[in-house]
Length: 186
Image 1 (cartoon, rainbow, N blue to C red):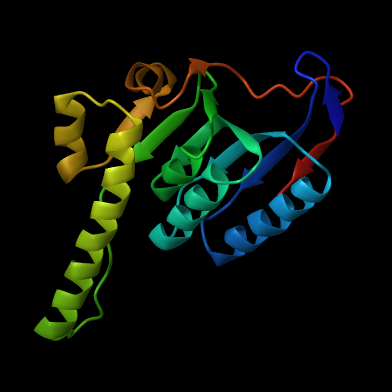
Image 2 (cartoon, rainbow, N blue to C red; image 1 turned 180 degrees about the vertical axis):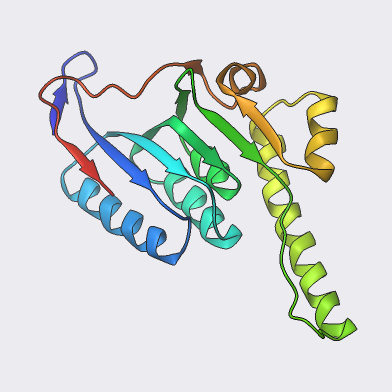
């Protein structure tokens, strides 16, 4: 880890990729525990994920957003679905020129022959997940009415410029660890 001379704080550079699931939650918990033991103040994290489970994404968002470490998030390719919620945990957020984001409503597949009561439980769960994620999205980004309309019924894709206009990222910039920095994969 390198000392950040300009701010006097200790910072490090990380990559985080894969599905948002219980394995990722465990990896992040372990990594943040090591970061706090090392006295890290700022963690720069390149995120690459097409999403995963809503509860795991919300857990990671809440954990990282309330950590004593400042997280700076980067999208160098794709951050999609519930991974956007994880990405929003960053105090500062950046996306490469060629990066994209995608947000959508929750979805599930029912077993063939499912009874109406089982289908109702699935629908109630999806609506609850949508309420949790959309609340966070509305607090964090400023989408246009047209974008919210697309999000209501379809996948909403945002390029880096759209993401900046919506406040999803602070700026269009690449993940660029300084020469000599140790890069760790979470």
